Amino acid sequence: MKVKVIRDEAEFMRMKPVWDALLERCPDNMIYLTHEWMQAYWETIDLEKEREMLVLLVSEGDKPMAIAPLLILTERRLGRRCKTIRFFKYEGMRSHLILTEKPTEVINAILDFLRHNRRMWDMVVLNNLPLDSPNTKLLIEELKRSDFRFGYTPSRFSPYIPLKGDWSSYLASRSKSLRKEIKYKRRRAEREFRVEARRITYTEDVEVLMDKIVMVDAKSWRYKTGAAMVLNPDVRKSYYKLTKMANERGWLYIGLLEFDGRPVAFEYKLAYNGTVYGLRIGYDEEFRRYSPGLILRSFMLQKAFEDGMREFDMAGHNEDYKMRWTNHIREHIDLTIYNQISPFFILYLIPVLRGIKPLKRIKDALFKIGKRRSRPWKS
Figure 1: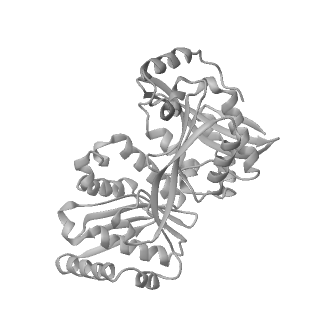
Figure 2: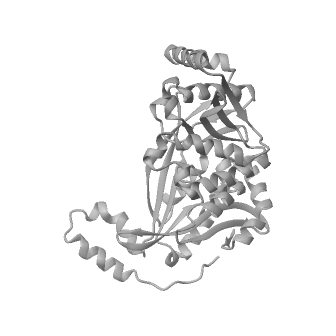
Figure 3: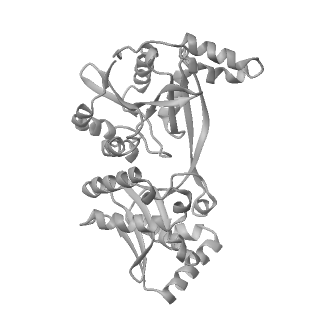
């Protein structure tokens, strides 16, 4: 197995046909691993951070076998600059390696690459790896057999709904209180407004659609917490770009609820490979008493059943309002690989060193030992 390093954005764009072909054969074929998703991230998110592209293409002879969609972020840890290898990913979204054939050999080729280039990184932090992926379990097993020191912790427990049967049978399986509330809230809204719910899979004007979503998002709870798109230009730009690409690819699956023609709730979703992916939801707090989010969620779920989708992924955490709709959660882990020759290896040793004083003197000594010069990557 040989590993080729893609550091250049132009080369990254040229590899799209290879990327698409590998992803088509990957058991973890999800929208978060598409070339379009990675491109939208790279062009819009974390632009102000010190980062380097580090996409690894693993081949056997001339045959591409896998892709590791990675980058290097220079972060501040322990008051020092730490070179951290991470996935291309939006905050909170799951990701993985694109593995097809011979996954054991591929993972070991990637680990060998990291081993031979130890002087160029301090930590590898892979967030939100899905535990139900066979490749996650295989990665852990191979790390156990290696000379690397690593650890992992639970991260997200994300609710999802397997779309089996039809909408009526699914709804009958949920609690009586939920069924009653859906009917009551819908009727209450219809007594006072002209209620229209739409599932949008294509739009002639992306700007107009996104302007409506941004407007509702600005009137939701996110504005008070500073998370609204209107307050975060990079996030807003990323969603506009993602919407444009998804519209062209036929991936749009956006829900919009209007009262008398006024947008009051949205569900920003994309449909890919039989799964409806939830990326963002919001509703206008002014209409809270009508539960517009509940009305729109029931509408979108019904449409997903009718469209023959296999799964409705709610992403994020297992908040109570999500668990009303399902009994299923997908567990994720955050996995960290520590570099033994980096001063940041102390983060792995801290549990052992907690009782040793003075810890600061040990930390400073490790940093002094760990000073090094940059070297080019070895493939």
